[in-house]
Image 1 (cartoon, rainbow, N blue to C red):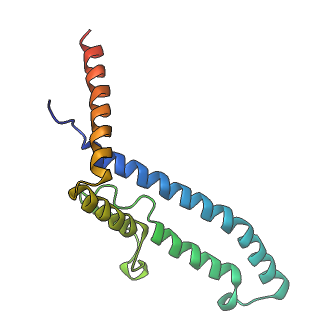
Image 2: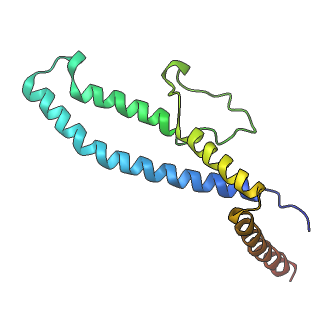
Amino acid sequence: MQEPDLPRWSLIRDMLIFQIKLAIDAIRDLFLSPVAMICGLVDILFGKPLSKSYFHKLMDFGHQSDSWLNLFGDHNKVAGNSNKLGSQKNKPEMNVDQLFSQVESLLKDQHGKGGLTAAAKSNIDRYLNKIVDKKKLANKK
């Protein structure tokens, strides 16, 4: 049996990570929306200067959390992302991608030891191969 054109497990991993990042982003947005309104109203009511503005501090926090989340980043590692926006000085020391890398490394260690992940991966591979084989048979008819 020949290997699929797309590296199956890399694609599955990338899809799962993206979905988790989207969920984190949505939760953050749900939190930031009312907090931004409150911060803006407090700034208006108390006449806060720009340097002490709660709203602008919240915007800084939002920018930092965007960098930490890195929602669309590292998606084209193979192609070499030459279109990098923003400066490196604003990048957080740790981001979601690095956390996922650590989790992935732990899972690979377990897989290497023949743990539960090895059995699960084997079963998933078997079912995915059946699906691909059925599709190939259907296309030949």
